[in-house]
Picture 1 (cartoon, chains in turn red, blue):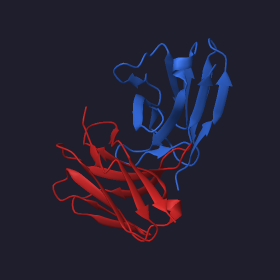
Picture 2 (cartoon, each protein chain N blue to C red; picture 1 turned 30 degrees about the vertical axis):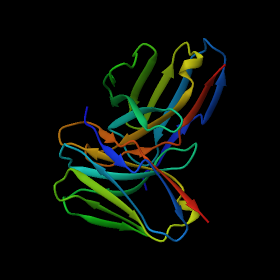
Picture 3 (tube, rainbow over the protein chains, first blue to last red; picture 1 turned 45 degrees about the horizontal axis):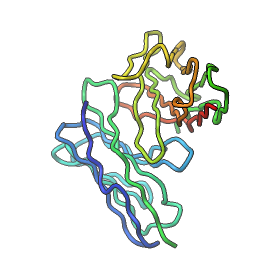
Picture 4 (spheres, helix red, strand yellow; picture 1 turned 180 degrees about the horizontal axis):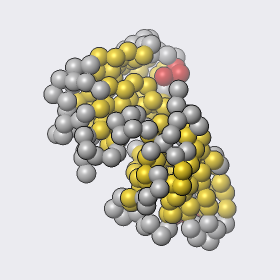
Amino acid sequence: GQQLNQSPQSMFIQEGEDVSMNCTSSSIFNTWLWYKQDPGEGPVLLIALYKAGELTSNGRLTAQFGITRKDSFLNISASIPSDVGIYFCAGLIYNFNKFYFGSGTKLNVKP
Amino acid sequence: GAVVSQHPSWVICKSGTSVKIECRSLDFQATTMFWYRQFPKQSLMLMATSNEGSKATYEQGVEKDKFLINHASLTLSTLTVTSAHPEDSSFYICSARGRWNQPQHFGDGTRLSIL
């Protein structure tokens, strides 16, 4: 199957710092999604990207659809303790019936 | 926004019991539903994809006779873990999607513990 390489695997940062994580692949994707999962809950959609080069914000979160369509990144500015969780990227390839998920980035924020 | 309801959220039962998990899309028609399994500190592992009214497509290594999936309507899919054993203990999450390129929306998951 298609492989998404998500990095970093985990991050430990201080409250107020900015965070950046990304997903890369050798395949071309038509849609990129970013989710956040809190412990014991299902992932919640943060941002959806549909066009190469697209830059979309959701509050302190900003995500971009890479121009090559093989990558995407998520930035979180001025992190706060409630940003703690696991962030997943997901990519959709045209004609495939499912999204492929990255392995997740575990974010820890120290107050 | 799109809401997916998953029930129950927690199940504890004896080995050999069959367990049914329901997944409902509350405010949209889910053409496709997905069932995932997640082990602690790991990513989502897709088990199967189901389209309304047709048989589910299982990922390699997932036993279709063990994990029965029914997608009887555009708002409901069920996963039945038949004759569950301790190794089936896991966090099961469903998700639902409208059109093919629309985002998937997830339920809150079901924690299954088999004693």
